Length: 198
Image (cartoon, rainbow, N blue to C red; front, side, top):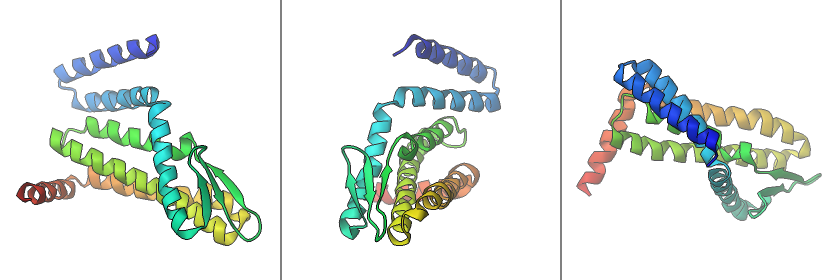
């Protein structure tokens, strides 16, 4: 661990402890979640990025094995999209891993005051899975559009349509977890009731 990161973590811990003791809950939430986001990003590179990237690649590979619309080289993070005119090679990298969106969600959830510890763990698992699936859907949409539409569709599919679909799904997650808390808490209570019986 680099010394700047270590001093940053110590300073962040001191700042959030002062804000908590001073009962400044809004500042505690902002400083806590922003600080945790940068710490997790710093610690997560390259290990979590590698894990998330390969998880996404394996999700695409599973669908590709069924459809044969693309061939996936999981070791190198490359998706070779087959089409009738001009095949396209897509590289799955840092941006496609979903690390930024996952880390932002985890950081906000960690300091969100409405939920208890068990509820946060439940939404952590649910939200991480949601971001992963949203990312796989986005990249599969790129594969489908390029496979059927040709190489000319790659920029539009990857940069515009895929991102719009992905961020709409992320906004749905944020709305349901952070804004519409009563619905979210009833979801958690139903989940807990169902699994406590069985």
